[in-house]
Length: 55
Image 1 (cartoon, rainbow, N blue to C red):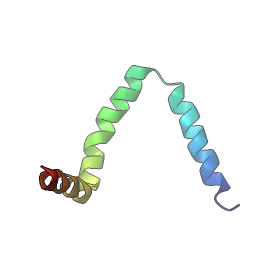
Image 2: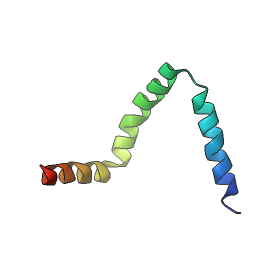
Image 3: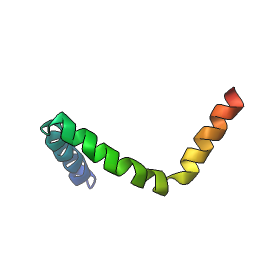
């Protein structure tokens, strides 16, 4: 039961995002994408390496 607040938080964020205009969602994604790219650089490099192995 101690994870219940996390469930409600995610449901609330989902509810909010569903009510945003589509162009605003794209703008938010365009802003957060490069930030996530900096944070998750190791994951990106691992994914590129996996693609190269599969080719």
